[in-house]
Amino acid sequence: MNNKKFAWLSAILLSVVLILGACSSDDESSSESSGDADTISVWTMTSALDEFVTEYEDESGVTVEVQAIPWDNAHDKLLTAVASGNGPDVLQIGTTWVAEFADAGTFLDISDKIGDYENLAADNFYDAAIGTTKYEDTTIGVPWYVDTRALYYRTDLLEEVGYPEGPQTWDDMLDASRQLADRGDGQYAIDLPMEDRQYPFVFAWQQGWDYVIEEGSSNFDKPGFKESIELHNTFYDEKLSQMGEGKEFFQAFEDGSKPMFFSGPWDIKTITERAPDIEGQWDVTTMPEAETNESMMGGAHLAVFHNSEKVDEALDFINWMAAPETQVKWYEEVNELPANLEAWEDSALTDNEMVATFGEQLESTKPLPLIPEYDRIVGEILDVLEEVNRGGADIDESIDSMQSEVSRILGE
Image (cartoon, rainbow, N blue to C red; front, side):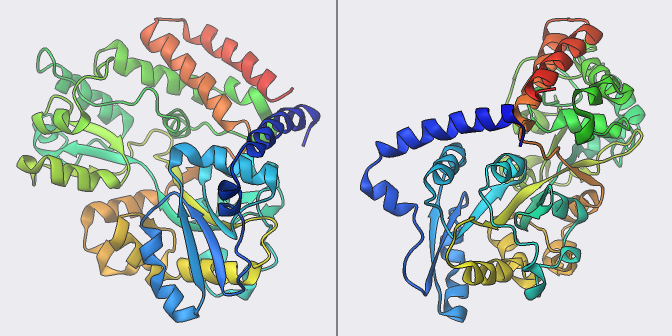
């Protein structure tokens, strides 16, 4: 870790230690691993896990103490655990947090332990999901569930403009969008995200760009990045997407004023339940293609806290969670997609054509940059989109300014 990174992280951890000192003894004990040899502690952001693990408890004789933490609080709680050394045996970690917390020494490196468990081998999982479990020369965890983004579209309205199967390329997308926006006032093509932290990378990947860690801020000199900003701006400049928030996305999708949107698999259920009147008039397709149609590999992993005294027990639990049959049951319980490839052969997933489309998209994904500075760099990119789309700023000037700030963030 370079000196600037170390100083920045140390300052954060020092402040967390001071906060920790003010915590009650009840708070402290809740973050410590149980001394009971037949008990492991698990921190998760998914409350459904508490009931779900009873089958494992019955099979193994091990008690799994599940503590559900809201996503809004999880980041700070993990920082507190790192600072105090009082963490769980097993913890859930989102893919975009891997680098930051790995850099802080949060996780046990399990590289030399994976071979001891039948369900933990890398070839059981999507390559891009495995990519998000690697940090420098360590393996920080095992994929638990995955998600990605695809295109939801109104089949009836897209058929009217010549794309009954949905737009397959970005040229198709622009053509269809212009026709849809020409329907009249208040009619748009797509509910395009301007503040989502993944899409700037997704759009850039599709223009042939990639982020190479060793290249730092010079990554943003590459033409594909500028092309992605220009593409994004086209949708606002030509009023193909609404600048303001407008209606809730499912309402705009239902009434046809925004007949397309990008999202994850959870919105299959949202649209089914909240817009029942358009049943049979919508579908999901893979991302439109330019140089590629790559989407992001998201989801979460299960990791072992660095100072757990129950490593074997923790890994046995993770091995059970990674089994294909467990992953199918978890999908049926909470609609989170399996990371295990064999699980995708189950009829629970293959019989749902929309879910199967997400399985197809998962074959064409990339991990977001695994760097501790990820969140701050994304913030700078979103500032560029705000300046260009809303403020009419010059794209080249905004990118140049952003690149200078990214260089500072990276300590170049």
